[in-house]
Amino acid sequence: MSWDSLVPRPSLVAPGAGVLELDQGTTVGGEPTTAEWFRQHIGAATGLPLPDSPRPTIEFRTDPGESGPGGYRAEIRPGGVEVVAHDAAGAHHAAQTLRQLLDPTAYRSVPIHYGRCVLPCGRVEDRPRFGWRGCHLDVARHFLPKREVLRFIELLAMHKLNVLHLHLTDDQGWRVEVPRFPELTRVGAWRRRSMVGRGEPPQFDDRPHGGYYTVEDLREIVGHAARHHITVVPEVDVPGHSQAAIAAYPELGTGERPQVWDCWGVSDQILNTDPSTSDFYRAVFDHLMDIFPSPVICVGGDEIPGATAEHGAFLRSLIEHVQARGRRASGWDEVLDSVDPLPPDTIIAAWRDERTAIRAADRGHDVVLCPEHRLYFDHRQADHPDEPIPVGYLTTLEDVYAYEPLTERVLGVQAQVWTEHLDTPRRVDYAAFPRLTAFAETAWSRDRDLADFRRRLVDHHLPRLDALGVEYRPLGGPHPWQTRPGVAGRPR
Ligand code: ACM
Image (tube, rainbow, N blue to C red):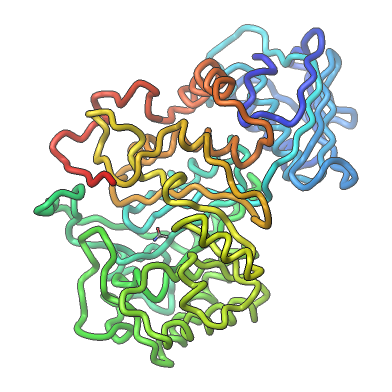
């Protein structure tokens, strides 16, 4: 494979002459988690043992004096590969780059290709543009089985993304086991039916939907992400988007016990602000912080119908609780207005518009840019007549690529995968890819060029996704089995 196949595009590439052939004698060593990852994945795809050795052929070294966080330099010569990375994350990024430099069969789980296995000689220097290269995943509206979350993490790592914002609770489902409050999952983790599409009158299936992650599942997700240098930022959304919790424990709400919601939209069920409700959620967040080592914990705070000053105070007390445990809270940008005063180290996930992002930055907050009109991947990706359940703003691959983040005073950027209309892992693949590939280049690369990106995507990167079995949206429009005839969307 060639140097001009890399996605996201590296900072600097200097192709050289010749190749390094990997064979039975090739050894791998250095930064242990990276060497192990390389041995496991490249070993499986090539059938080579790639053992460790004191003087390995492929060596991943770390040196904090090299590059910046997440950065690395790699030199491939006919006799071996020398990687020097700033940190272990940088070493992992280098390993991902080497995998791309092999051919797409390097993404298979067994060797299916018995030709020579070669890396082109040359040099690469690379470091990320943003420190927060996030993808949000809504596992509340439709549950994504644990194995699929693990696979999604691998896909994020392949794209050098480093934050998975896991939206764990909403009106339509509660997905975290909390042993102290078993009703949250016994009642809150499933609904008796789901709305299908966004037509009027609404259509429903008559099929129960649900699922949740046990504490052990979540620990596995966190560990798998850590191995890929991805931080999992958990979100329990309060005080709106809480109907599933209120269905489980009606004393958290403001009226009769509702059912877990079976519609899309914003439910008007919100939490009450009694001291006992604050205590309940402090315990829930303590449990989250026990499982998730992330320095950032998301309290939600978006779309609160009928919010009062007491709801702002409720959010503030949770934010302070998170801080008291040595973490930072993040919230959707509504908290800028609803929480007064808002603790200054609260991170703002700016989703509504750029003005809000600027307002947050002006007030001294760190900001993650998540703009709905560019980075919401549930939104329709074409006006193709066969586009499945077209909702939201038209957000083509090119629109995503063209998104130019406000670069001042932002931690980074984040794509959102909301799942009201993504009811299976296959639909998640279709919505996320290849737009997430375009997004990754915005998050990682300083120099971007759409025509060059499209060439690398078509000639090199889609074949990698094919080898992994990712069911992305073909650039020309959906396969017949990816359409949803008869299910109305709601384009904006
Ligand atoms: C959001 O889209 N409600 C953050």
